[in-house]
Image 1 (cartoon, rainbow over the protein chains, first blue to last red):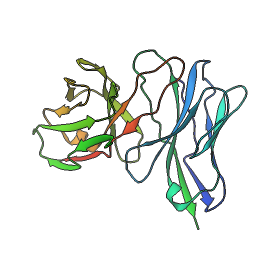
Image 2: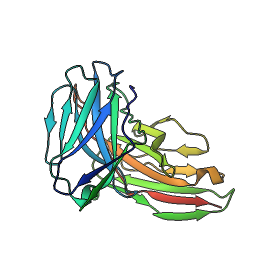
Image 3: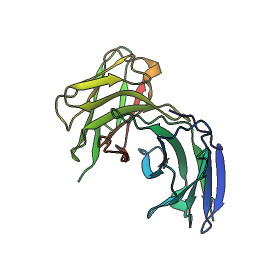
Image 4: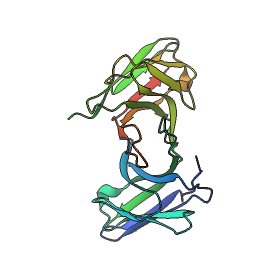
Length: 112
Length: 116
C-alpha cells in the first residue's frame, strides 16, 4: 500500500472550515484514499473514502487532485467535538483482506 | 445494534500471566481485525480474519494468538504477558470488498492493557 504524509498538527477556529491535507505521491490507480479520525483514544471512526472523484457525505468532503497524488479532507464547519487525530490511509483493493495501515495522523485542535 | 463490543475495558496483568481479550460484532461482518496502539503512535495490525476458521498474521503478531470459530467472535489471546505488550487494543470488523467499492471499518472502544 502507498505511504501517506500528513502534517503532525493543525489548529482551526470553531465554525470555520478545517482543511486537512494528505500527500500520497506513490498511489497507484486502483488504490482508494480513506479518512478516519480518533477522538481521545476511542476507537477510530470512519469518515469518508474515494478513488478519484470528489466525495461528500454528512460528515465531510474529500477532494482528490486530478493526478491523485494528494487529497484534502474538509470539515465545513468545525466544532469543538471535531478535535481529534485524523488519519489519511491509502489502501489497495486486494480482493482478499482489506487491511488498513495507520500512520501517526494529524492532530486537529478546534478552538473557540 | 451494538456494533463491535470489546471486553474488558481495562486490565492489569503481571509479567508471565495470560489473558484473552474478547471481541464480538453483531453486524454479520465477515472480516475482523485486531490492532494495538502504543502511546502517541498509529495503530498496528496484529491479526486478522476473513471468515470463520480463517486467520492470518498482521504486522506485529508475535506474542499473540487468535481464533475465529464463529462469524461474531474473534478473541485475542496473550499467553505470556510482557511489558512490551502494554498498549490499547482495538478490535474492528468490516464487510468483504464488493466489486470496485469497499466499506469502512467499525471499531470497538478498546481494551487498555498494562503489564507490570
